[in-house]
Length: 216
Ligand code: AMP
Image (tube, rainbow, N blue to C red; front, side, top):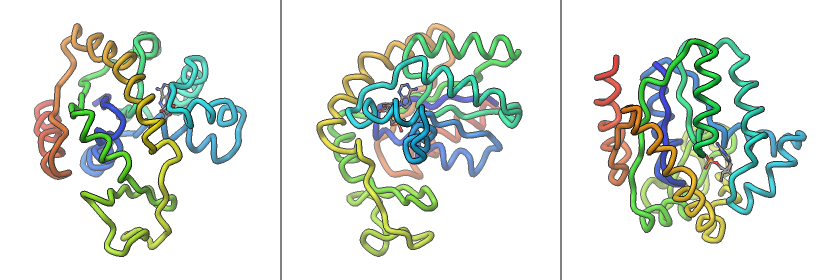
C-alpha cells in the first residue's frame, strides 16, 4: 500500500501517521522530519533549508527533489510507503509521479485531513514535542502527565521553532496557495479521501482506519 497524507500545518499529519504506522507495515517518509534532522546536523541541505523553515516558507523545489530521490534509492520503501507533508506543490506531485512511474509503482490513496484555520492556530501554538522519542503533545488537548516532560521517556519537551503565530500565518498561506492544487491534482485521478480532522485523536484515526481497511 502506498499512501499520502496531506493537510494544513497542525491538521494532525504527524500524529495520524504515527497511528497508521502502528497498524500497517509502511515506511514513513516525512520531508519535514528529514529537513529538521538535516538542520540539526548542520548538513549542506540543512543550512540551506533552515531560513525558509523558520519563516514558514516552503523549501526550494530542488532541495526537496534531491532528498526524495535519495530516499527512493533505499529499498525499504518497496514494502509500501506513507508520505507525510509531501508532495506540497503541483510540481512536486508531478515529480513524484515520474519517479513512481520509473519504478513501476503507484499511489493507492491520498488522505486529506480537513480542518478550520482557527482550530489549527490552537493546535499549533499548543503543540509540544519530545526531542528524544518523537511523541507529540498539546498543552490544551493532549497534555503530558507532568508539565513539560515526556510521558514515555521523561525527556524535556520542546516547541518547534516554526510553531509560532507569525510563521503559522505564512505556512497557512503557503498551504492554501500551493497545496490545495495538489489535492485537486489527485482528485482528478480519483485518489483523494477527505477526512474530517477535528475531534479527538482516536475518533479521527477511526475515520482513517476505516478507509485503509477498505483498501487492504
Ligand atoms: P512539516 O513538518 O511538514 O510541517 O514541515 C515543516 C517545514 O519544512 C515546512 O514549513 C517547510 O518549510 C518545510 N517542508 C517540509 N516538507 C516540504 C515540502 N514537501 N516542500 C517544501 N517545503 C517543505
